[in-house]
Length: 395
Ligand code: SR1
Ligand code: MG
Image (cartoon, rainbow, N blue to C red):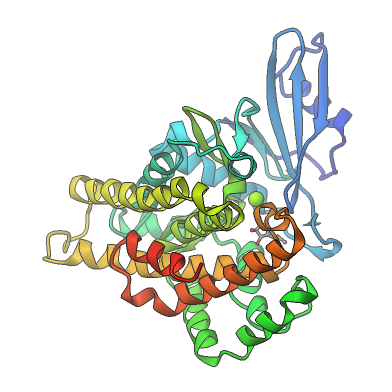
């Protein structure tokens, strides 16, 4: 993988993206290339360059200097492209089969050239269409167990950890999470976006002082607990899935944060899909919640036993306390994610495509209530079953 600096930043077009791929020697100048901008996320341009004859493709992802979902009025640092490629490279050191290959990155052009994963489907889309992806939670659990352990204080020399913390300082994108996940949805803020029919439920939430205090504590954990390098945006739209393969993409929100954050976001997005499904189709999602935790916890514990540098690694109860804190945090972060995906700025298709409209409002009301319950009850949870039961008890 090469990291270079070109002279100036310019926003790519379909033709300049294809030309870049040729210039980088990734395709021959004689190849018949097609290039389409296929980005459907909130922030970046994503080009798929495809060689018809060789049947070979690749992805060129480019950060634009603003949040695409809002427009140029929301400026955003291009540094997220560097964060993304660096995080992918670091994740690949421990879970190479679970992330796309990085072929090239350029910090000035804010470009990352990636393996084409078009044979897979974005997990959110597949889950909405009713696929259950039997390996999804085992793969994500392994990804989490390995990536969260091997970038933590338990695995690293303190100087290496300091260097990594510095490398992954990500102020613009952390600011988005601090506002959109942990703050705005808990207040009558102008960034919020929801149907008028939900106003009563949103107002109850804004008036719930005890809940807001707990949300504030979770926000503080996110800001101050530099436990490990987290993906930072591990919803089901950041995962490509297939029958036998899973790949985690888009770590541009990566930063040092609490171990439970990615776990909680993934669990919340499974619950969001469960809320969209009929009751008799929710079982596989609850199984995924249990499996992701159990696989994470087993993988993390094995790595701890094998590779922990921590002087206290065998102190009775230390690993258990670490996992307990992660479960509690994960449940609370899941609650925040449920709430923000319902009334905050960035919605999810799982909820927004529920029909008819009155069912959508009913399910969104339940999303807000289950989110609040996970936040409020999080310290009582000991197992993923406890989280699932707390969620189910309100449906
Ligand atoms: C302005 S960005 C909105 C959301 O999209 C990203 O995927 C993150 O989830 C962020 O919170
Ligand atoms: Mg993303």
